[in-house]
Image (cartoon, rainbow, N blue to C red):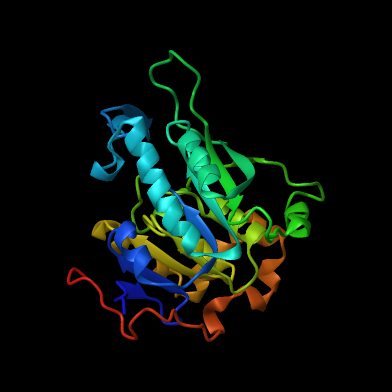
Length: 302
């Protein structure tokens, strides 16, 4: 059995430390949904502007630039492993920019997934373009695909319409990047906002669903999942990011913090989840993942 880096008291938030390519083949459990924020392969000495300062945008060895052939091989490998971990009616969401998203789309088609939508996340507060030689980068793309072309997926159309003020939800989402209150445990260099992940999870899963993130980072996927009554397994190879994930999950063990976070996410408020105890995992007995040892095994750093 695998040893967890961390498990929440109710077993609704689980972390594995290691390489997703090595860990995914070691269990047969299947998930309702996968969210993946794989490397964009952008770390090649570029610069950006953050809080008024010019900073290097290199994120680490895991994001170093690679050849297009190597990127395609990488994407084919992890998407193939993830397909085996999805239920037949399950769906996968993958975020990216033009640097990697076309490769991802081609690999999805090659592996037999059916692409459902390509969401354009239009950031309402993008960083400025300091070179002033081209348009400011303000969008990312998120592909939504299902495992099988002929097996129906779950989509909560009515809920998406409700939170979009009674109109059909389009594939362009205008949402801000992460806010200061999402950085209380420090931040991951590619951290996604909770509002984005909450919308994704609400749209494509039912209450109690199991969600996998094979490149967990600081586990925004897991925090969002727990805020709205879903269960989570994250895999991350960088121990520093796992420590942030653990701290973030422990932070929302505080009931006041838990509810404060929910009030700050407009989709949760609009959906009326604030008034529904059924979306709160905090007082529910949670099913345990069968391939994880009973006791948590955490880093000596903790």
